[in-house]
Length: 263
Image 1 (tube, helix red, strand yellow):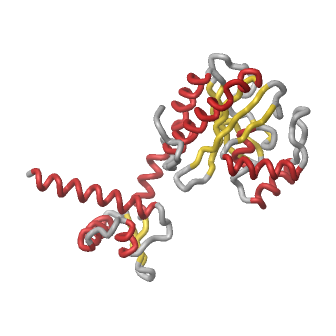
Image 2 (cartoon, one colour):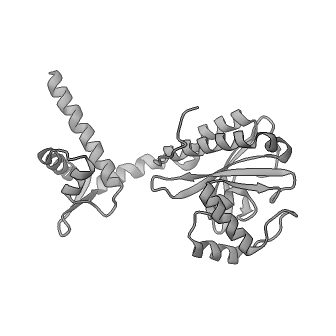
Image 3 (tube, rainbow, N blue to C red):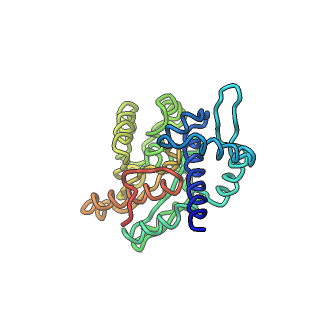
């Protein structure tokens, strides 16, 4: 009896391994490539499992290319699951944790129509009470979330958005020079961190980190917003906490990151 249970468990485990491999290759893989990815799994076992998944439409077989890929049944199942797992839903607990750890306001934003849209907010115990509610649009260049998202767009899209929106001065500290701003985006991409020093609101500093999906695409940004006087003496601690939380949210979206750790 125990032997049968172990065999069933191994088969289930192998099925999930196969699906995980195929999820990373949207154009499909041959069976030999799948076996290579599975560290030379037995050919007969992989073939049998693939045939079973074909019957259930969890995988599709491309006859001309001799490749297997994720099938319509699994795509439908994923869509049902994700309908109840929006970025806001997945990020909320982590945002509340970050707010509790820092005492500061936490924002979650996305890029929409060349502007940054706030899609969620958690007020900290030392909240600034800024008039920045969910649904508020902000200029993408002057705030940390907008910059962190824009930094990961390709250069042609960056230039198109900048040309469309311009770089107007929001405060005396806002970067308004095109070349300087593009260099800043490059630095942000390398460091995976964006900071605005009183560039959106005088006296307020924003620190943002990227939120990535399972493909490694930056789909949102999470930001700590607080007075410069409170951020300055503990900036390094805040950055570390922020990076851990951004990794935690990204992991919920299927992305693996070196900062993904419990604390």
